[in-house]
Picture 1 (cartoon, rainbow, N blue to C red):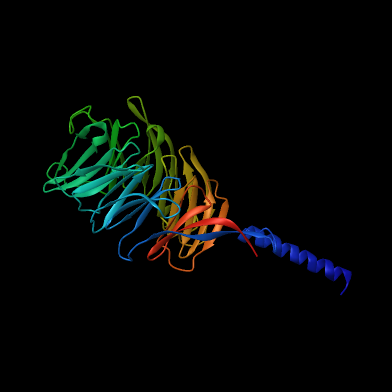
Picture 2: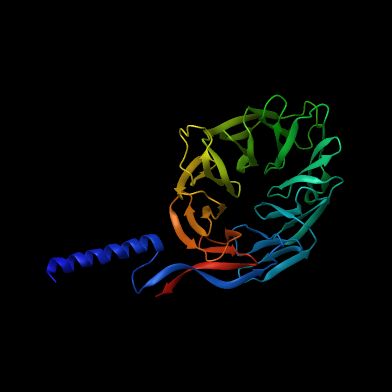
Length: 388
């Protein structure tokens, strides 16, 4: 073989090695490879137990099923556990706080933190939705015979029911509350409604907690988005509130006695997935264009990553996204059995191709440690160097 041929082959081998390192995280042939490795630690559950998981960025995670809740470390050992029976458990989380109740119809909500059970809130009427903040303030929407009621509770502050209201079917027959959230400081509750009075609209009301009677001039502020459907609402840090409709994302801030706009971004895609990281970051997966001509729309499978200052990055998966979760200021993006971890600027951290179906995958104490939940067991996986 000629000297040129030998040189060409050498260049090809180097190029292949470089490509392998870029795509698969390899450090070279015959050297150490960075891969997710199953530690064989984890938790088991019945296929129909409706398992769910939550991590606050540490070695421990919450594990909820129909029969109870456990607080488990990365070796699969329970720090504490509590039993209950819930047919369809729903878990609301914020930071270290977790609230568990029956989805859509429960009359009891159990509140926990890393130390264990904090309190149980019993209700006179079935809950249609409940939401918790990092201080343990629990906002509950209940169904009444004549309408709805929104109440805020926190037995940790030595008070039970702060306030409540009945939304009269005669006075407000077409205002349906869909989300209620309490600010970090505990001074305000924001309630999002779908308003069907004349046309579909999103209505957001802000009420001071405990400072004024409900249904009077005590209303702090109100925002209406005519013709826009509701997607989500959430208090972020420093009295910022994030509002997402099917047409825009806007961040508003409570400043003194007023509500001020921080920034607004138009939406040109339907949202396929939405995930939060504490009260500082969020990401969403772009679905199909929301307008017929698709003008200004992101390509299908785009993940846009934000903090409270605005967009920080994006990642293009190239197909419809079916899984999105956040932790440690990073994002896990998935489609079918294929998962990518990306940082806040959208740069790839690692890639994982699952052999079996995955119910859920979330970060633990760092971006190289995850829980991967399969059909009947969740394992802890770590990214490690593996010798060829």
